[in-house]
Image (tube, rainbow, N blue to C red; front, top):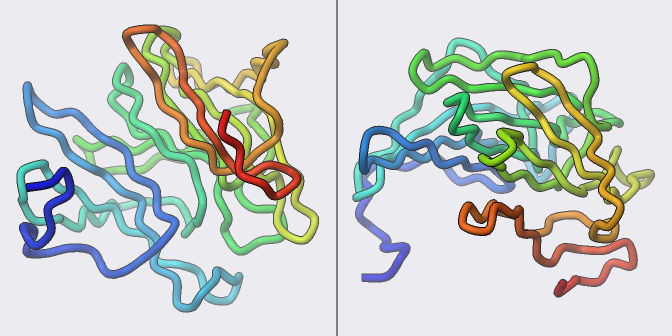
Length: 213
């Protein structure tokens, strides 16, 4: 049996792409995947044909997916960033492409217990960005965002911005570290609790080449 065995889940969401997935811990051993899953009517999103937003959950161990059908939810997005804030017990979602010329600059939180999304409306926030990456830094209790595309094609700009979001105060902070990776989109990023560091690798750069840093 591999890490990703097939055929063990009876019910699954319909086919889709560019979704975001966060891991939500429940109890001593149960792991639940919550996904803001996007179903587009065609190959791309357009203002006249918005995607359908669904929240699904699936415990580890081969159980079925469950359509959560939350009472409120963000508009349909592609390429958003989403991560689980273990201290706030919320899934935090930011940005993405919503079919508009600018993309989204909204910050949303999902509460698994109440099965509800909340638009947090922080006073300040990063630019509307897609294809960015997020990791939850449990040491600083912040969701860390990096990079992405600001705006949409053909006028999109690559970002090297690093932002931190504090759920307890509902504030975004432009962290502006002195040294940082170059502008890029779609890198890999995760938090390493042992070293108390956020680790970033790769991504697509301004020159449209893949980075291996």
